[in-house]
Image (spheres, rainbow, N blue to C red):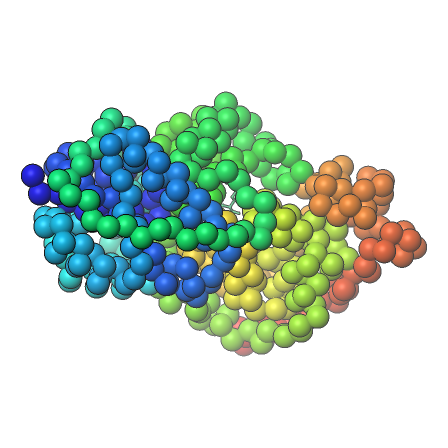
Length: 441
Ligand code: FAD
């Protein structure tokens, strides 16, 4: 029987993989991964993400071997590589799962021209065409989007195939390269991700209460698993449906992909065109202090150091540091977006862009520009005992709860912890003026 090709991309799993199931049902399959330069060195190259992806691919290769199959790795441009593979193997069709960013769309359109193919849904819970207003338009506000999203019928979660049929001949495979991460990353691959999911399921009921506190281990830590498709979001939503708040977060994930699909210009521009006119400051020293966690605002510094050390940051902390960069330092959200993409293992164009534009008040459904987080008060509210700060800013380990988010000057001096790099009240005023000017107020 002639085989078909299964092109893995950011869906490095066997369970609930519609493209894999469809290909495997049709007969023998040849699983392929293409090391595309855009993936390894593209707009936002990241040692953490490349390392994690390669580690996931090694695990996937051994999972496939257990099923009687093999992962074929090739370097090059996908359209060329897949055309060659179709010619070499006589494959009838290439199956893959749909992706939504501008680069992926262009790449997939080129591949679709080059080879017989079938695209499958699987990266999201709902497809962009399924969540539209009564007039058939995309939503730009989350709450009505979520209401509509709830009503979309869902497909069944699929089991992974028990065995995979091998072709008569395997094409040659390149070796996976080695890559080093710059942070301490979670264990890679679907089986580890499934363990993380299983550990979180019984905790989902407490999610709504705990998720806002970066010092509490109250969120799922599944973002890198969803980013790389080690888990399917549909399965995660089903297994964690004890928490409506948790399912809502997965809905945000779909929402930002849909925004990217309908408005690809958000990649380089503010969603709100008027707020593309904000005159941002550029100050290398302040930017460096932010990146290194030396701003003198303990909660900001804890978060930035957590990012550097682990390639991950708590959501509340992401909101705080993004607000700080854009409103307290008045540095362009795109600069922060890039720094996150450099380090985050879960770094994802849609969610990262959505998160940054939300924090900078330039996006769809943004936080209004005049609501500016006070980093000290955010610290007091969401890290009330200072555990998060103490974990990531060891200089402040011995500072008592009362002062941990705002240590007095003499304490800072003694502990060699920096003074605040800006005056929050003053910068709040400067930011308000800059936004009002952009809006012509
Ligand atoms: P949980 O709280 O356990 O949430 C479960 C899952 O829901 C997450 O794994 C994620 O897939 C999804 N999710 C949760 N919150 C959001 C959200 N606000 N937007 C979209 N999806 C969400 N998330 C990324 O996956 N990649 C990014 O590059 C990214 N960049 C961000 C940048 C900023 C400035 C902000 C404010 C948020 C960003 N987020 C990003 C969203 C969110 O912070 C992370 O998904 C979350 O912190 C991951 O931890 P978790 O898996 O424990 O999340």
